[in-house]
Image: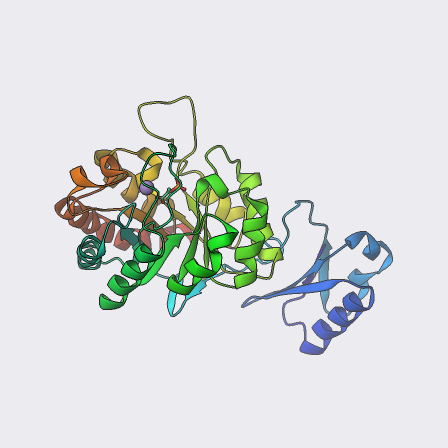
Length: 344
Ligand code: PEP
Ligand code: MN
């Protein structure tokens, strides 16, 4: 259940409601917007049935939240959450954020070169996998800690943040030591123990959509992180499996407005895994900006033909810089688009 306070409700009125909620053994999730305060009730809200909150001074309305995800839902928290990655802001009205880098970290020179290219195009976050979820157990599995050291060094040199995947609880502490954002891969979207564990770190978490994950399952996955005390969730739409085989996955850009309607957490797109072929990446990245996403994560490589993984979908320097030029034009256009949209 949520309790919606009247515009201009006083601090005392809000506190009186919170006090009563706690008396009946429930927790409070407070969302204070510019115009409105919403008090979310966390716990077994069946207990609340007889408490006449509607009659409390300053209360405008009470609404039953029917979804199983609560902390993640926009009903509970009407204001956009802006995830703060050590000063870099993702979500809400903040600028579009680009995360770029190779699929896999292959060595210090390679990740340094990727960082240089990524930065030159305007990316502020360096991506790269050190623990790789590969379809075949015989494929390259990642440089592990050595790779983590390299990506940290490269990001620090170019004043960038790091995003890298954590595949299991056993390596969480190690990965957390080197990264700024923990990436949960598509194959782990419903690894609930891992979600709870990353939730407990309190670090920003980029939660990729499962290969066949529905929006509802994805929102519930985010709830595992939020319910573990972590409000720094970033959704990543990376394409889903459909009957279509012309592309590696089907990038579901409609997930962007849907997630934005249902949740307050930001959503970014991954055009690389979304399509799986380099020459489709740029149009879908530009479309990602137009969809209203808060950012993107894209794969680049100095020599895609020699990449140890996902070379076929990686952009070389020239193509990446060209894409970023297009992205910047679309970002500017989106500012005007938003102004028009706000008129309704
Ligand atoms: C990746 O980002 O390299 C990756 C493996 O992504 P996903 O989990 O979306 O397949
Ligand atoms: Mn990849």
